[in-house]
Amino acid sequence: MEVPFLSFAPQHAPLRAALTDAFTRVVDSYWYVLGEEVRQFEQEYAAFNQVAHTVGVANGLDALVLALRALAIGPGDEVIVPSNTYIATWLAVTQVGAVPVPVEPDPATSNLDPARIAAALTSRTRAIVPVHLYGQACRMPEIMALATEHGLFVVEDNAQAQGAAFAGQRTGSFGHINATSFYPGKNLGALGDAGAVTTNDDNLAQQVRVLRNYGSQQKYYNEVIGYNSRLDELQAAVLRVKLPELPTWTRQRQQIAAWYGQHLAGIAGLRLPAVAEGATNVYHLYVVHTPHRAALQQHLTAQGIGTLIHYPVPPHRQQAYQQLQLPAGSFPIAEELAATCLSLPIWPGMTEAHVATVAAAIRSR
Ligand SMILES: *Cc1c(COP(=O)(O)O)cnc(C)c1O
Image (tube, rainbow, N blue to C red; front, side, top):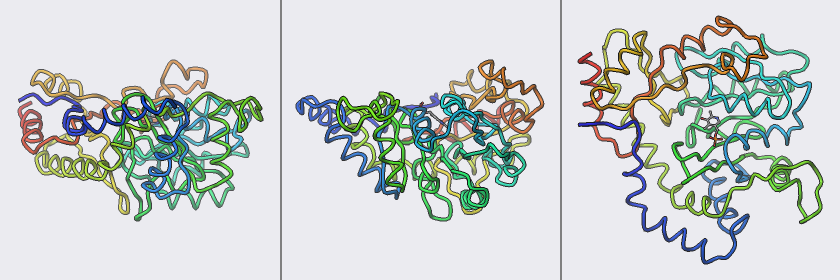
């Protein structure tokens, strides 16, 4: 049996009629940008995420950029980011003109280590951007306490963790203003690019509404230098069909992770994901670590099992960031995690037989 890294079929096939109905509704509405679908989805996602406001935008990167812009973060400012994250977290900081300042993760969870943040703060630090990597909630109460103590903003990057929680509180509801992505492969994915900002702050929500729409509240009157970054009606209609399924899909991901835990137990040199006390993990990715990654990945490919690496090169070692002059060895935990991580297949609809097949292939190496 082959096991693809990701299959959308079990998620989308049962929703086919509902999705095409949603398309038809939008086609027949004759209103394609910032209409009723976006308005309804924003309310439904805000209720799901337990926040006062959701503002739909074009993608997750823009959600981060607009959140930082709403906080007036820009040139001369520094922003704490994880040393191991998808590069979008850093790009948002750079795009508003601020400087990303990396902080190392807890190697057990791969998430930003709250205890390491204080040492990276300077008089220019304005904000912290924790990332709930692979679907596991960061230790947000500690991060919020530190931010309060130092007068900093917090912007959660919740692109990988829709529905996760820490101590019962949803990710994307702790920070002053937070970002998420509905890229197709995310736990809640559109059929194309989409993203959102979530916040409890009326004023920040309103600023993002203005920024996403050319800096305008009243058509053809522009208050600020804005963007064209709107969630479109078609994607909002798709997301409205998929959102009610998310809790079921999350339980399936957690069940698959539990099966992996049983089937992969006790393999020498293979470290399985650990979940911090108080955190939940919605397993956007199931990431193991091994010093023999290249050989294992090759072996699994030969057996028809799809894997990916999230991420092979940490942002500070990317060519795009060579101007920061952060040489190899400057963030050794991120570099070690990047050298040893391997993402195994995980998608709603995977069965225990799929998991057993992956585990048998790993054991046969
Ligand atoms: C996917 C992702 C983003 C960016 O989202 P897009 O919608 O692809 O722009 C940002 N941060 C993290 C951690 C992500 O995984």
